[in-house]
Amino acid sequence: MPNNIKTSRQPVSLKLSHEQWLAFGLTSTVLVILALVIALTYQLGWSLLATATLVFFLSYPLIWLAWRCYNFWRQAIMQLTTYTQVVREGETNLRFKGQHQDNLLAELQQEISALAIGNANKVQQNQTLENVLSHILDSWPIPVCLFDENNQLSYRNIAMKEKIQQPMLIGTAAEDLGFILENDNLTHSQFNQQWQCQSVSYLFQQKRCHIFSALDISQPLHQQQSITQQNIIRVLAHELRNSLTPMASMADTLLCNDSFNEEQVRMVLCRIKQRSERLLSFIEQYSQLSQLPAPKLSWFDFNDLLDEAKGMITEPCLINYQGTDQCFADVQQMAQILINIFKNAQEACQQEQCQIDICLYYQQENSQGFQQTKQVIEITDNGPGFANLDNALTPFYTTKSNGSGIGLSLCAEITRNHGGEFTLENTVDRGAKITMVWPVDNEAHQQ
Image 1 (cartoon, rainbow, N blue to C red):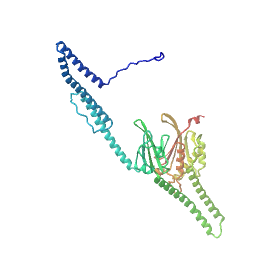
Image 2 (image 1 turned 90 degrees about the vertical axis):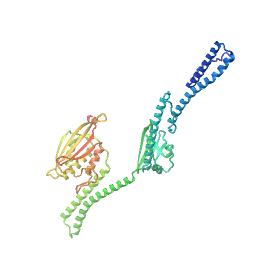
Image 3 (image 1 turned 120 degrees about the vertical axis):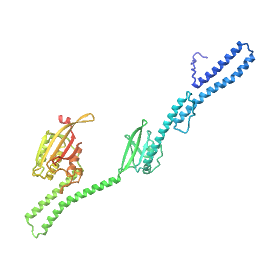
């Protein structure tokens, strides 16, 4: 052998299983007993033939007893092993052979049997619950499907299968069915804007799964569109009728005269002009409600805004103000809010003089562990209050004969665009109270 080739011998470790150790121990015991018998006969002076005959006849019962002992333990352990494997697989049709109460394996058998019964009850409950849920979901008209952690289909109800209109086999990948997973949300091109889709991800056995459902909202959408159209037609018809009817009547009166009186013509034209301006104002308000621009927030002097709003109302009104001078809002939109509220208070007031109290202050609120400053504006009047609080903010709803139902809706929409809340209530003195609350930018104020 060349010198550059080296061989190494690694020690071989002898590792025996418990079963092999049991067989080795029983074999050693039999051999030791036979060796003692041979030594005893040798001391007694037996002949070689007599010793061999005795060893031969003793070997059979000793080997039989060792085999019985080995087979007893081996079968008992194999039965327990097989039983536990069957229980783990979820089978319940196999029963373990009863052991004697003095047997060391009897207690272990009882524990395994109790575990098997408990697992069987849980499996039965889960199967019953799954069957009930599957039956309920199959009868639902709402399409529903489930995907496992590998985005493979694990369940779909009948409504989903009918909507997709293609085979939906269990185990099919979501992308093969037309689903798209983006930002942990499932979407499908089959569900258009007339469907309200919802994708929810959840953890099941530490694995992220997805559930997708879709609700057909076409009928509610059509109903809402129909109601909206009816409201628009009703309001427009009311406004056009109130404006065009007197205008047509006055024009007909003029046409029936043989000669035109200049003073009468001027009066008719002035009233037609007033009606036209009112109708144009209504259309402008409706346009503002449908296309309200984003607010441009800034700090400004609230007293200057009050003076501007007072000049926009026709009839005199007593306005009392208290609070801080600085306000955080869109100046133009805030002016529109004040003008609408002042006009509503004047039109609803039944007293000799309309009185409006305004209070502006700030309050601190704890939101998710952070201190946040909010601006509060409270406006009260001495009128009769709101006749119907539930519908006071509903667009086009009004209890006044000459109202459009847009003013308060516009105010509420502006407040919501400021990130705030617009609430209405009636005071104890039967007056109306309006509260507006929205967050302010303290850093911009400090600058």
